[in-house]
Length: 190
Image 1 (cartoon, rainbow, N blue to C red):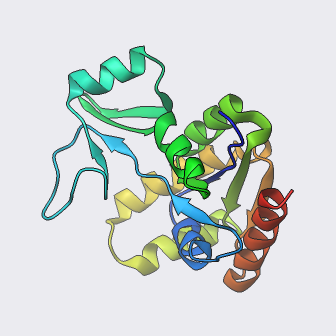
Image 2 (image 1 turned 180 degrees about the horizontal axis):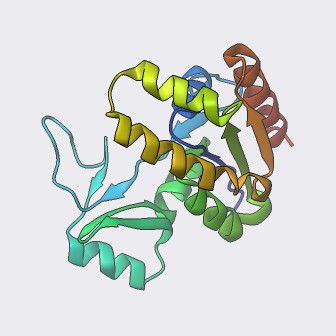
């Protein structure tokens, strides 16, 4: 793990994490490259191994877990794994870039434990649970029951915020993007 600079971003669903990442990913000063996750699910449509995901068999994934090759992983449901390979983070850094990973809050805390000062962990917080609910309802993609499940999960996830290096409250998108850009710039240029 030589000279690794890793950006970890976690947030409850609907907090604006993906939007913030999308706004900063191409900033040349930050030299960010999105880490490609590994999964045991089959490719969908035109997805390609090594582009959208690293598609692994369940046996291969479990063997890599046993060899401690993952920075984080999760079995989403029986036999369906997702994770971040340490070799992917190293590959990005070897190319002179800074790896950025988008992981759930527990994964973010675990990755920070592994990489310590080589990682910057950012938690994107919605301004309130009520606003989060409004955003999820505004997407019009989930049932009322699914929205309630996401809100309940978000309340639990928000309890992890103090375990992150930086908490960004996304009550104003432009301000949140500027804050993320500033804290990442400071981290990658030190």
